[in-house]
Structure formats: structure tokens, C-alpha cells
Length: 359
Length: 124
Image (cartoon, rainbow over all chains, first blue to last red; front, side):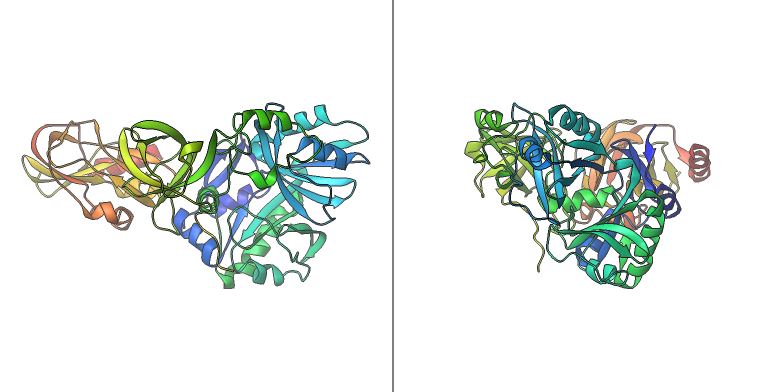
């Protein structure tokens, strides 16, 4: 039986098409449809219920040391109020999850994790922490929404003047028109945007307030379908596709998140041993057809890769995909053939992200 | 039967041009269920199609669905417009035919408009 987020009833009222996702019932789209929702985020603004995301707190005098040991990125010189993205690896170098760390203080960190990995992450972290540190799963107490798109600042500004300025920074205890919120300048769409969380009992009120405030700015509710097409265009990995316990962050081309010069962290040796015999790249499909996940990729009749996600890109107007390619076939411009259910569709290796917003 | 539209329970429609020739597409209900259609994979002229078996695929942003043939016959022509503008299926599912089939030799059990609407209601 799937769980419902604190905003579930509103999605039903708004005629969201509810589907099971990571143990929750969430809207895959509303009556507007995926493409309209996608375009709203690119051109105006969209509102997503992301209450399913997990939230884990690490606090105590040894929190920083543990974070640095558990995660591949380096948190040593991070300031309060800043956020940082990082994979979390197993000793073999496979990826347990990818997450965002919010530094609330030197001794307190909030980890935003994937819904599907929440229990696994919590158990892994609890069984690997050392010293004086407490680990708490606060996911069930919180409602969270993502306000994304070029108009999101103007919408939020109507409800509060306390808005985080820098990308990947956040503010706590923000009074959003009467609701106490945690507001971060983060997102999963490649656009300007904010993720806003509050106590679950205020979730519906926050959702309604934002939708009302955003009406004049073209804000519409958006579902999981648009979330996926937006993150794909932005070249962002999705756990279970571009990342898994069998894929290292270096194979997923997330080099900027892996600090091999750090003294030690779980997975350091594993990642090194594993190497990068394959790498994540982008594919622009030049033929007719949509390559989704798990399609073999060929060059000269030889299998040299596998797609991990793919879709029709509403912004670009042609199909795109991401693939793990053998290291000799990762150069931009290489022409490949993707096998889509028996059909051979031409594609070309391209740079990620597919889409970068105009600032 | 000429000019009248019939349906399959799998949500395809068929309209006969004469006894042996008909156009096939997907129903308005089907396009609504699929959402934004972004790709239609059609067979080629000359391909044989078999009643009750898949002959085309229609893809929305999120999903792939097989399209089943209401009849056995040979593809006479395909609607090329759908290759570049698959959204035509969303705009008017009964204008956006997929294929024209000739030499029709067998049929699936077809529902008329009223029977199809009753079927949709009973499913709901």
C-alpha cells in the first residue's frame, strides 16, 4: 500500500493522475499534460510536491568527520547555510545514493536523499557512523515543494523577503506568509528555483498559497513526468538509472563530486580499482524513435554502451538519452546506433547537459 | 459498414472505405489516456497486418503502447504526417489515421460507437 504525501488530497482535487512512485502515490501529470508542465517550468514556473524525498539529520560533535567519511565530496570548508551535492558509495565504489547536504551548523547537517533509498541510507549511515553523532530520519514530519522556473523568485517574493541569494544556499525559519519554512535555492530542473519545506501539517496551506501567489506569473502544478524530462535535459542523473550500486560516481561522470585527494572515505579504494572503463555521456537521437533505458548502443556492429534514460525533449524538440559508453566511445560527435526494440536508430554522442538556461 | 466507425476493446478505431479497405487509428479515449504523444512508429507500405496483433507503436512522454490491428490485410498507405507531427493524434484522434489497410480477409470482434461507449463506461 503506497503512502500519501501531506498534499495528496490537493493533487486529486486538481485532477492529478496519481501513480505509485518510490512507495508514494504522486501525480505523474495533471490535466495540462507533461509537455505544458515542462514548458511552464522552462518559461514561467511550476510547482512540484516533493514531500516523498527523504530527510536525514546528522548531528553531534563528530558529524563533520562522519559526513566526510560517508560521502565522496569534501565538506571540510563548507559554511553554514550552504548546500553541496554528493554521492554516497559502498566500499566497492558503487553508489548507494546521491544526495544534498545542507550545513545548518558545524555540528548539524541535513541530508536530502532519494525517496526510494531512504530506509537503505538510514541503515547504512547508522551502521557506519563513529563517535559522538546522532542520526535521525525526519522525513515523515515534513512536507516539501519545489518551486521551479524563471518566475519563481517573483512568486516567492510576494510571500517573503527572506530568500536565499546564492545557488546551493539555504535559509532556515523563513516566515513564508505565516508558515515557518526551510528554503533552499536548489532544484532538479536546470532552472532558477527553490525547494521549500515545512511541517507536514502546513503542507496544503503552503501549496495553496504558492499556487495562488503564482497565478499571475503563470505558475501551474507539475507532476513526475515533467520532473523527469526537465532533469534529463539538464543532464542530471536519476538514481536507479545513471547511478546504482553497480555504477561508480566517476563512471557516471560526476568527477566534481568525488574528492580522491581526501584522506579517506568509504569507497575511495573501490572507485579507484573500478576505474573508468565506461563513462556517462549524452546521446542526441538523430533518427526516428525514442531510446529509453536499457537499449544497447553499437558502433560498427559492436556493442559499446547501454542507455540509462531517454525521452523526447520538449525544449529541444528531438529525442535525447543518456548512456554508459565504453571509454573509447565517449568523444563528442561519435556516431552510434541505438537498438530500440529491434529497430536501429542513429544517434550521436553529445555534451551534457543538453540544455542550459540563459541567465 | 461503409463510413461507420467501429472500435476494438483495446481502443483502436476502424473506418471502412469499402468491403476490403479501411483506415485505422486510436480512439479519443486512448489519446487522452496516453497524454502528450511524441512519437508514432508506423509499419511500411506492403507490410502484412494480422487481426488482433500489434502493427504500430505510439509513445507518449512517459510510455510506449502497442497499437493492435482490427483486421488482417496489407498496409496500403501510412499517414506520413504523423511522423513529423505525432501531436495530431492528440488534436483529433479520428482524423489522425495511422494506416490504410487493403485486402482485408479477417476481422476482430468490432464494437459500434454505442457498444464502445458502453464498454468505456463499464470499465470506469
